Length: 208
Image 1 (tube, rainbow, N blue to C red):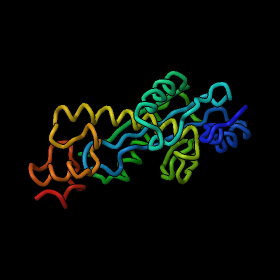
Image 2 (image 1 turned 45 degrees about the vertical axis):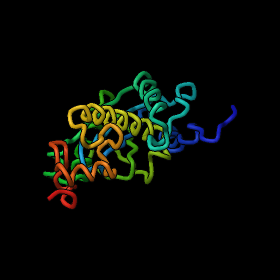
Image 3 (image 1 turned 120 degrees about the vertical axis):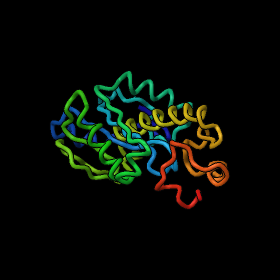
Image 4 (image 1 turned 90 degrees about the horizontal axis):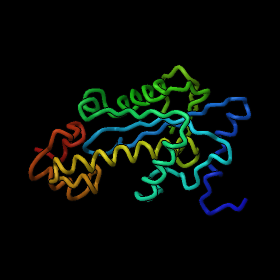
C-alpha cells in the first residue's frame, strides 16, 4: 500500500505495541484549551478500532489539521469509535483549582466514564491517577493515532462552543480566537473588561 507524506498508519507504533501484548482496547486521551484566557478546558477519551481497514486516513494532531478537515474527521471518528467520552471544566473550576488540576480531573473522568474498559490508556504527556494502566507520551497527539483522534474530538467540541459564545459576547472575537489571547481579544479586555467566560487567574495582566 502506497504511503503519503503524512500517513496516519505511521502513528500506530504505540497501539501496535499494545496489541502485540494481547491488549484489545486502547484508549487515547487529549485535552484542548489549557492556554486560552476564556472558556473551558475540554478533554476527550476514545477507543478506536485498530484493524488496517478501520484506520481513518488524515487523522493527525488537531493543530495540524484544517478546520474543515477536523469537522469531517470528527464525524468519521464518532462513527467508528468503539467508545468515547468528552468532559470539560469551565473557567470557574480552572480558577478554583488551577488549569493543570482541572485538566487532570477531566482526563480521569473521561477515561473512567468510557462505556468499554480500556486495557491501556495512551495520554499526551500528563500523568493522572487512574484505575487503568496509563502510558504518557510526550507530544503524543502527533505520535499516536488514538491520541490524535481524541485531540480532534476535543478541539472540535471546544471550538464549536466558543463560536456559540461569540454570539453572546461578540466583543472579544471568540469565533476566531477561540478564547486565546489575540490582539483584538486583549484590547477588548483592556477597554471593556472581562465577561463571565474569562478565567480570572489568566487575565490579571490585562484587566484593571
